[in-house]
Length: 112
Image 1 (cartoon, one colour):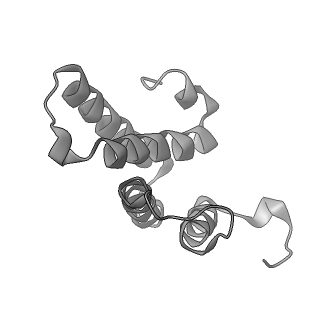
Image 2 (image 1 turned 30 degrees about the vertical axis):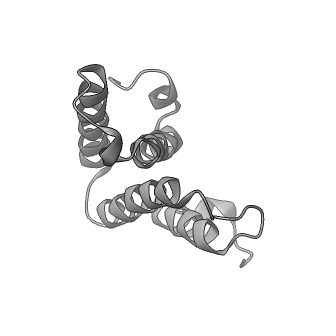
């Protein structure tokens, strides 16, 4: 990992590091976690693309809307086992973790 002033890091670089860690870490074996890893990867990949195109406000709005849709699906049981609970849980948690980097309130209140 290169050594640079932390203030020069941006969200895109942080997301790229998370994607790299997901597939290159030696801390845990991904065997048995494929669905969870797939959810995290998809969330990070989508957010990386968005981070390069959207304003902060647009980025937050897009992913808060996705979280609201996921919550609606879970609350109304509009999913099934084939949808991959581990996938959606990981996808959801990854969205929240990145949104918290932008605004810590997103860890507690996703309407902010």
